[in-house]
Length: 225
Image (cartoon, rainbow, N blue to C red; front, side):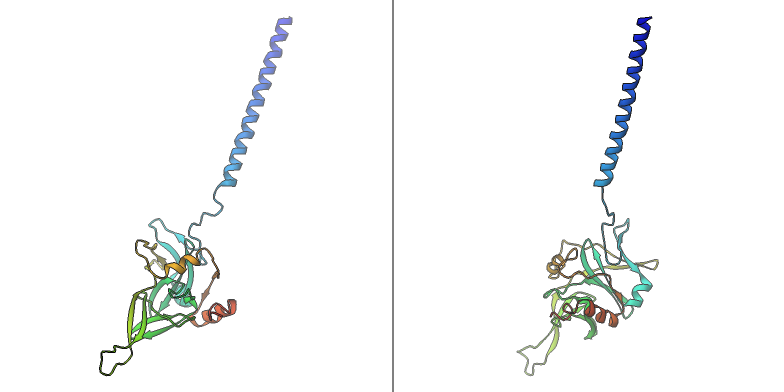
């Protein structure tokens, strides 16, 4: 009788021990899951932007709806923290680094001018002219060898990084930058990367209203004061 009772006690002790082990494993697994969730990525938008950019499976970066950008005429965005500005001008989309290659002026505050048949963004800080199509810096110069030298617009070469714009099904995308080639504007793009000195904030505005709004939000930035 005593033997049977002792055997029963041991059996109950083994069952209790097994229950304790199972309960411990359950809590341990829950703990590991909690740690994984806590340490996991908090934000899956790897290409954060003031316009909510997203990376498509083919690598293109979504900027916004075609009609929205046509109405606003210009919009700012970020690609991996890099500030860009997209213009819609005379039926064409253009995208380039938002900071001027000269001293980092905010091109999204600038006016667009036609120079020798080329649409150019004029930096609001020092009036540097940059072609929207190619990113070339333009300047007026004279040829001293001419008998009657007259100022003519000439190119300094490509100074501003241009981003390829692709329109698909009413959406506007840009291709990822090709960093195998460097441009002067890369310096200021890196300086202001990830919301640097003067973060842009969300700016969906028309060309004229955009300049006014930018000056109201950052009164010293658009005028370099």
